[in-house]
Image (cartoon, rainbow, N blue to C red; front, top):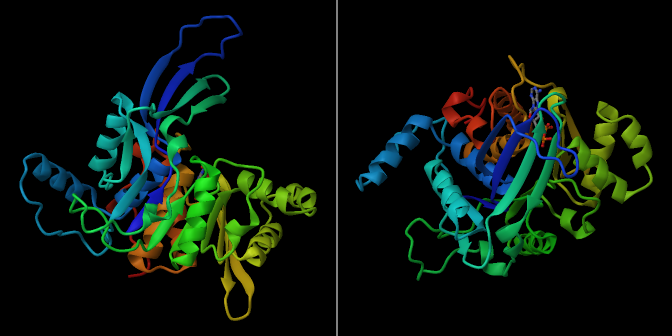
Length: 361
Ligand code: ADP
């Protein structure tokens, strides 16, 4: 089981020739809405990348016709791991839409709370067509109500009404920062006590995190902006680090800082420049890693959710295929590249059988 504890949003996207001025009303070029939120995107990435597209669609149809699902015939390259989403949506149209989309993609939504008193989180995105510049307003809504009794991610008791809910501890918990920070900190501490591996994606970028978060953290995956800001909070070397952003020497220095605070595997995604990773040599106490250039892309259509697809792919490689960090990073890098070739968030994320197989397992 991979458990994702995080945000679920509906993205409301308007494209316009230019941003309206204060008090001005403009006619936009187009409007669309769709499921999003980093938690939901990463859950769908985990589900899609650990399944084959055809198998999932067949299972969906059988469930709709209320037939028993046949034994899985998925190939070795799709490990079909249980993907468990924990979060909250409102009891409204957007909330129902999100849950339907997640289920259709193979995510277990049993433990997504639907609360009457809250609205589903939204991201209002205005895209200026000429410049491509985005302006985004997020209303957390129900996401702000995700608080963490320590039992949140522990096995559900035998009285559980759903056969699909968890019966054992997860192999990995994935967290981002679109739910209250106190919840994230609390979950990391409880996971540490229970010896459950955690992958933290500290996005969207924040200025600082309590040091405790890094202690014993297994995987830290962030983009350059997030890495820069967190480093800024960690000490004076940052000004220098910012100047040389992206250079491998500097990336390794940044990784070493996080290793020193207790993180085992540090991964910095570099957009079109690929990714830098470093893993801690437990015996020696130092890090080793390297730069992997971006995979080739025919045309960059939309970079939305590239980071979320990367996180999901990395998690599936580690948990589902038993991959080491180097292999997991390389596969995730290929998945990130496939994602930017398509428009949209979740819909752009490939299925397990649509990306070349992993070089392991
Ligand atoms: P985020 O979306 O979180 O800002 P990045 O922009 O760093 O994250 O992208 C995540 C990953 O997606 C990159 O490490 C890379 O593997 C892939 N990726 C992103 N943009 C491109 C691109 N233009 N070409 C190829 N791969 C890309």
